[in-house]
Length: 168
Image 1 (spheres, rainbow, N blue to C red):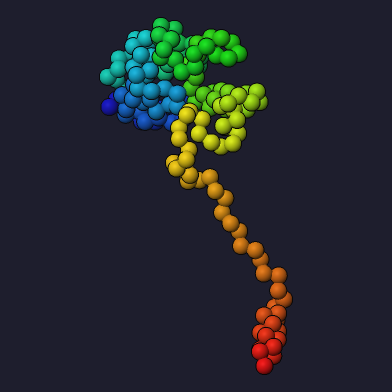
Image 2: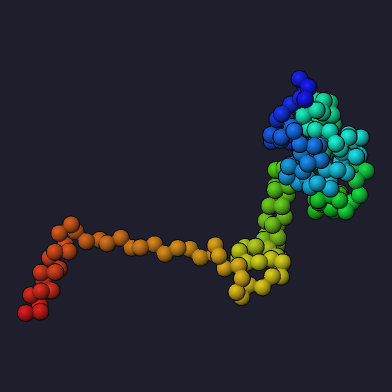
């Protein structure tokens, strides 16, 4: 490994291991799988067998710019993770926090218009047609809290003496 090798590379706001090969390292970023990473690397003309730490700053910048504009040129539409966006109608590929933000907005929109999926989400039930009679019961109940005893400090003894007198 050369002196310019970086063992930890900052990519999309997170630290990625620089010893990994480029497609595997890109797959560590939320929203990018291995196949998408290979397609991006091929599209940008970067050798897939190189380590992430060997890439120059300009190559890393090229990768970040390709994914930050949300539309990756040259990738087939079926490979993108947000096809026909609700607001813009464009085919997008989202990464990191944008992916979470858009998914949360979609769920909130469905709850607001009270679609079937939105109602299921709001009730905390399964959304995609799974059975609910027996499966998926864990994590739905709320534990029972024990009520506090509101007795004075000497109250327990007074009651026991009264009950013993009643027995006589």
